[in-house]
Image 1 (cartoon, helix red, strand yellow):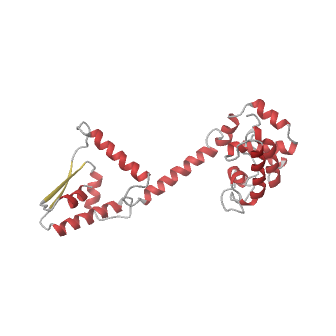
Image 2 (cartoon, helix red, strand yellow):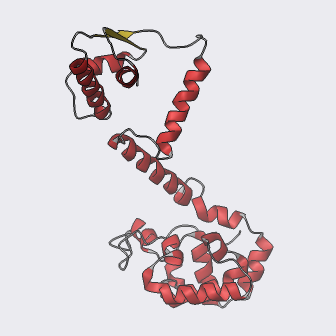
Image 3 (cartoon, rainbow, N blue to C red):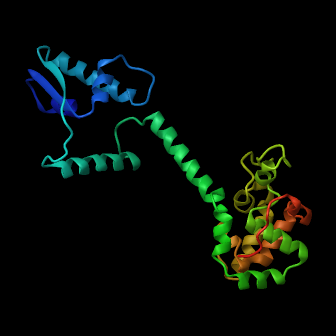
Length: 255
């Protein structure tokens, strides 16, 4: 930024001294570029220096280390500008090229967060779903279903079901992927987006809407009020059968 300001604001330049509180950055600028994250920034800096030198051949450059701005008046301003720059990157308004390493890290963090949400410690998503409904309402809704329907709904709400992601964990399926869509066949995928069951899903959602029930999100599909229509949809897939509960892992019927 200092070099950009120098390029834009000065007609005559004799010397430029830039103070930096990051010794690693100074070492990086002193060495040839390497295939690591942040190299596009170093290249940008070198190109700016070359442009300035072409316009001002007599100009000298000095890069100097200085202590950080702790305890210096204006610290809050500097921090505010840094945070604003970070927000600009996050919002897509930054003019600087994106860092591939930062993009990879962001994707990894997102996937890790999603994994914790769905199968994290304590049962993940399915345990939270059961915790949001009372035991009495759950048992009452299950009691109105057939035995097969009850089995299917319990499997869906507990996550211990005949989906490929679950069966693959125990060696009962060669792959965790949906054979139609080529993505992990989770309960979310089965209920929300699998193309194989598009017609049955449309009928399921229409039935929910006709009863004044929400139908857009997975918690809506797994709520006691939706059990009757949920059971019909699950059984139509052929993936929810009583014998599939035999996998050696505890099944929680309680909400």
